[in-house]
Structures are given as structure tokens and as C-alpha cells.
Image 1 (cartoon, rainbow, N blue to C red):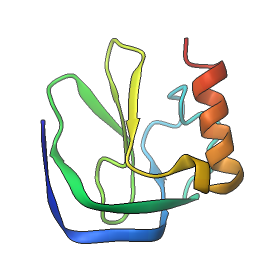
Image 2: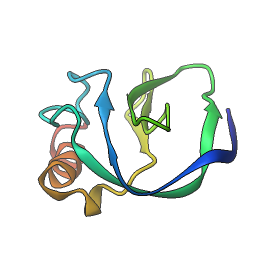
Image 3: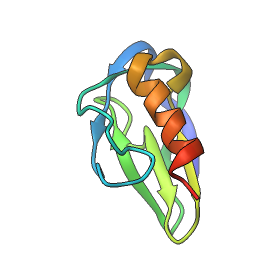
Length: 97
């Protein structure tokens, strides 16, 4: 994959567009939920076998997973994202096995 400095830096609130609502990490997360971003870099190309599961208006790969593995990544701060952030963390601990 590739990470590069972003033309659009996200600091603060952004809205999550969920592409795979049945993904164990995203289960029950509200479409358009507010997440907290704080970054100047972005993923410009995912490696083969990686899949985007959520994005924001400015970041295509706000959340992704590796197909065939129990491996996920997010580019936002779920600990700062209210009840949906807590649910995402709970999904990771309880539903991802």
C-alpha cells in the first residue's frame, strides 16, 4: 500500500459512510455517525487483499480490513466518537474473534 501527505487534512469532526454494515467491526454503527479525525496523511493505495469498509467525505479508507484475516484498521479516533465509538470498540473486543 501507500500512505502520503493529504491535500485535505482532517482535524475534528467528520461523518462516517459505512460501506459494509455487516462487517463485525461496523455492526450496529449508525450511517453518518460523527467520528473524530486528527491526521495530515492518508492511505492513497491499499495493498492487495485489503478492503475499505468505511470512509469520510475526504478520506476513502477511514476504516479497512484485510480479507481472510481478523485484522482491521481505522484512521479516526473511536475513543473520541461518543456512543458509536464505544460500540466500535466493543465490537472489536466482543465480536471479532
